[in-house]
Amino acid sequence: MKTMLTVFLLFLSGSAIAQQEPAEIDNVQQTVDSIMALPLKKHPWLAVAGVTALNTSVQLYNRFIKKEDYAQTTMRSTIRNFKRGMVWDNDLFIMNMFAHPYHGNLYFNVARSNGMNFWESAPYALGGSLMWEFFGESDPPAINDVIATTIGGVAIGEITHRVSDVLLDDRERGFRRFLREAGAFIINPMKGIARILRGDAWRVKNTHYKYHDSDRFPIDFSMSAGARYLADDEGLSSGEFNPFIDLFLVYGNAVDGERHTTPYDFFDVDITFGLSSNQPFINDLHIVGRLWSTPILDRKQMLGEFGIYQHFNYYDSKPVIDGSDQTPYRISEAASFGPGFIFQFPKMGIVSSLEQRLFISGILLGGTKSDYYNVLERDYNMGSGFSIKSKTHLELGNFGRADLHVKYFRVFTWKGYEEKDLAKIEDLHYLNVQGDKGNTGLFVVTPILEFDVAKKWSITVSGTYYNRHTHYSSHPDMESETFEAKAGLTYHF
Image (cartoon, rainbow, N blue to C red; front, side, top):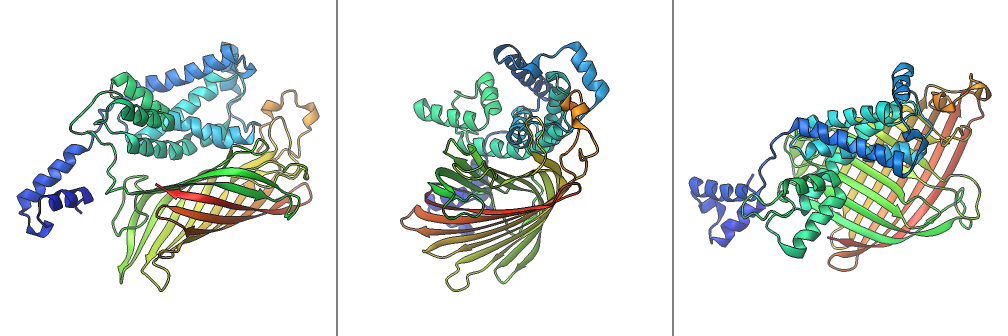
């Protein structure tokens, strides 16, 4: 399939594609190919050195600048880590379920920035995590950290790799070039460092200057800003208002009738930043990325694909101001894969297009709020399980669009602490449990309405209902539910 740029070049030449000789079309395609940057030469040992340098610099910073206790490593602590083996740790929710996946993205992108492809870069996330767990801390190495850092790091890493490529353009000079390089550096620091070391950050090219093919991988990016109301245990008058910023990105085609074998040539990302001192800065983050897919339906303007997808979901909140001590919601799906179906349907009345998605995934590592477990910095359970997700997306012509997200998570905590006497454990870092033995069902429903008010502007309103039911093996079962409502102004770039 010829690119839109090919069509544009042919149009400028005053000829239609059908009128071109095959040789002429090939020449135009060669012109298009000359625009795209050449693949980087692979440097696997430079990538190993980069991961090692990253871990060393972070460890030295924590040891000598921040003077963290866990960074005061010795040969004795390293030997102890190998002798005692791995445990389930008791770090904060944001540390285990977001910070570790983000750090894994840095390992992954060290390899990506040295010419490795997606699959070749994944072992660097694993190797970097193991190196840190056994050599970088005096605390015992954590099995949950390795899972989250590796698998969550791959998801975040490939997205930041591809999004940073969108900004780069080696034709640019001066301040515009600086802005592009700075933006790509913020999104993907490891690529930014590699480009500086290679001199690519300021080298101007007249060919092979672009890093993203917008025809093969179209992008829909929007940003919303507004206010949300977070209820305290369903309270209509006992919640709190706070501002938010939401970023939403769709990369590539969800379904196009073709077979896909390149990981993450389609993904979408939705991240909400809370701008209140009382709530987490990262309010929620949702990723779905295609690893592989094949067409299963192509008739009467209907398309369908079956594929394997990777999922990353992260919800976090804190008790509302002047409310109860209940945490409204806290859910994580840090490592998850599974099959999925995506269908696109033709115009039907006011609905100009309809897309339906259905995913079933196995959760290798998830986290849920606990009502009883509170050890060191952890007040949540970890475990494995499954999730079911549905998304219905409608384009409503000139009026706007509507989405309905329905998600169900089931997380089983297999290794409890109930048979242990915590008072007799000398060092709770070695408690080595997932939390309260039992299982949690988490149901999340989010309807979204978007009304167009100008060419690129719209008003977006949404609500989310959260219901959690937790069965405990040694404690009374608990159920909680709450909701939040959001309204904001959205700009489509």
